[in-house]
Length: 130
Image (cartoon, rainbow, N blue to C red; front, side, top):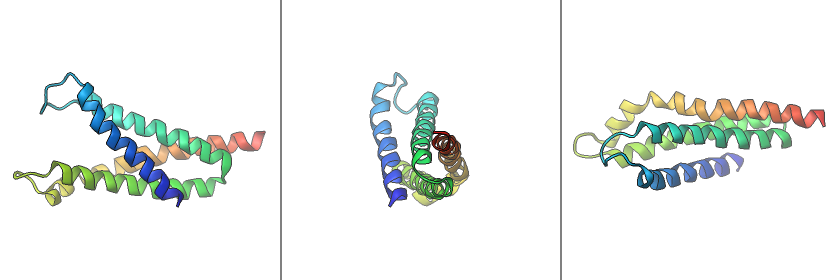
């Protein structure tokens, strides 16, 4: 259940960001806005770190690692699926986009898992020193 809650919360945050952020951007429609993408990844790292820290203060590190590995898997695969379906058009099908972007899976997995584990370890240490 913890994996589902975290995955849905991060997914909802990503979706809300990609609905709101382009409206605030000064980049012309159709042009890539690298800053918005980097900000999205940064916010994902901050969210995973914060939640991982809280998990570390409340649970043993093994549970934190298992929960966040599952969450990272769901978020990275979900992000790939949603982007591929959302960007598919006459020039490229969703399947072709998934194949082309599959290399992003380890990156997205890592930017969720690594900060959550690092912060979870810090939170676990903080809990033991109290």
